[in-house]
Length: 507
Figure (tube, rainbow, N blue to C red):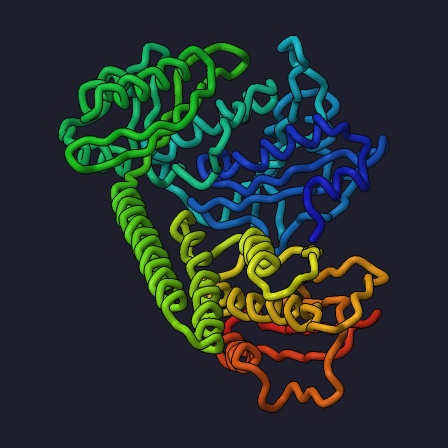
């Protein structure tokens, strides 16, 4: 389905700033929908003859919807949208008219003009209309909660028509919480509570306030309740800012082992500050789980750090043993083991600095490639180059893949560009000796190639049988741990190419 921006750009002449304002409304209008017990539809004019396009829709969580089918993308005109035309042309909220029927569902129409204020703060032109359509099939008994919801909804609707709702969003904030059903407190112009929903009263009770909220100065109450005076002051200042007509950031209050998230919104229909709306949500369990996860993540990082240290200790012991061995073959085998252990330690070093069980693999490949050119037994200066990106890989793939690439890179350097034997004629290569590591993702698979422009595979080489220990390790890891495939073949322009295809999804 097309997005709000796609539909607006395709069918209307709205400016980018207009579309951004519509996005802000659609990001915050669940609040208005829940307070209104109504569906909200965002309509934009398509042409001058009174045709409108629905670019967004939200259903209430507090009442049944008026529409079983999604209305986004629908273009309508004529008598069906006469109320939208009035709100758009006259710039006022339309509430007249008799109920209409959608199938078996009776609904009440309302239309709210959407304005974008100018840079100097003046009310701008109407750019769209919000349709507020209420399902009338369920009879309601007016209650204090419902009356306060509807009164607040009317204030916010007028602010949309004035261009003062929604307030600017602060960096890092989401629109997921708190919501109307979590807890609602309405304040008068002096900051005193005029209504608190039952859920809001329960949230404050967990903070240690057992009395009824009505009549309390909420800013002063926050200062008294908060365990941390700074948090209490910030939460109180947020409420005072909302009473002045500002849109403060959300605040958290900790008290008596409980945590509550608060969001204060100014109420200023027709530009007159009449109070504030405070939404609250008990997030005690959420913060408890967050703290548990932080502790767990720190423990996992510490484990990776210790594994890295242990691997480095093992590598140091192997290196020390290699210096004491007199047999050249044994010394070479121990030095190869040192490099294998060191490559695994690189992954654990990266994981010890990460917040999850995944690593940015490109940096690891670059370090392994650099080490391969430094330690390989060759007299030729071989260049290393990486193309493409491995991206972020889970630890179980990264640990095995780094060993595979370590072996392939060492083989490419040592066997693609072997040292000249005594008596051989030294011939300068036509091209600079080079090994290229390439990677790209395709359909949940990682495709990797290690290509050199060296002397190529010997005529008697059989990739499926025998081979040195390094190639045996490579085949075992690729087909076993990584559940992939490997092919060794002549390179496209000479030399040798190793091609890996590895699944990224678990299976």
